[in-house]
Length: 614
Image (tube, rainbow, N blue to C red; front, top):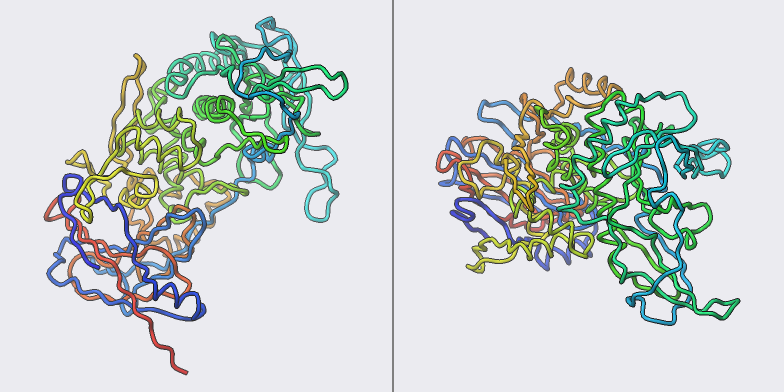
């Protein structure tokens, strides 16, 4: 199949569907073994100009890793200046072990509840009695004990250690040290980390500055009284009892922020800035042994990072508060199903992290208005530039690419498919995971023209993902507002609150992956630089490698974009697909001379089986 796509999205390209794998090819892949290879030749004569850029694109729209398997044969990629591409040495996609395991496990929790004898959606007056200080009776200087995640003193570490877990919940005394309109700040009653009153009050003021704007687009801190309440017959008394799965949440409750030296696993190379632990909103009566609820709205930030990197902690306030609001909207205020007296509290980590990191972006003017480059851009874009092929499915372990790529994908959705209004729709519907994005795109009436059907169709998560790679093609300042890019600034005012996002020029020197890597990685980067194996940085931030190299695998929801040629020195090209390759491959030609953005020629690769000889 071959087609030319022009003047779509006002001279832009939007791929709604591509399917290049024939039934015969699938049959051969299954029954011919992994040694089978396929070849494809392509002739671009008449298409290429001296300014053309030719790319090999491979995408993975599935939730599991796939093998790319396609590469150019018989010729190395040569740039317009005549230089060959460097052999790719990909940065390591490291696990981020500093996220407390308790927090990761809470994304999927199974709760045991009594056998109910009436509709769970009915409104009952439950008998839940929260800890008494929740009702604003606590005063500055008061001491309150909280459960926090800390290091197990009995942990001996490693495969050959004892069976004790590395982290446990510890009950620690805290002092109420600073107060805001919407929050309380607590620090440990014991310890040697000193934080002045002015530093803590500044933290409270920063949170106050974002509270109204954040709840305006992410939902309220209020529990819907209709959901997740139930009645049951007490097994001992025989009386009817009333209860709720979650703690009471009221609009005038203040958010509690605990500032302490957060425990980090000994195996990590980073440091935890903060965390939200959803168990704190669950009725402790229904928690399993070893889990403890603080029975209130609370999140945690690191004291050392507050001293050393205050701007990062201010950004963390918005991030962790988003997690709390997202959990209330997507879990607490959605009726949970009970099956055999069990409730599975499922929450999607990829979606909530995407929302949280982009909340940092949209609210940046509230807590860090004078930043030259927004904190979240510096923290995430360098990792996206080099780790885009790793995808963005969140599991265990979570990796550095999961954070970077998930932020970039959310930023891409905001800048190309509905802006802040789309972000708000994703955050406030009752769906989780990719279903939430699908529904929000439909609710925001996001449609794009499909040349195949000759009509406009709704954009879906999958079709948006299929076009994500184009942010690497359109890195300059777009003349056309409809072209797919991250290099677009914008914003909205909703209910009197202003939200903004800056243009992200991902090929900027500011976003080279070596710019923000840790000192432990610097020696490795210097070695690669000395050996001239840094790919095609050319002083830019993004990593694009020659199509003559096979880069595999492609992570879940990831893609690979590789250069075939700059210019028109050659018109014919050959490609090989190994038997285990199952990505979606095609060739894209960009002709900037004809149109600054979006004049693309797209063609599939028609692979034929290479006959094997003995």
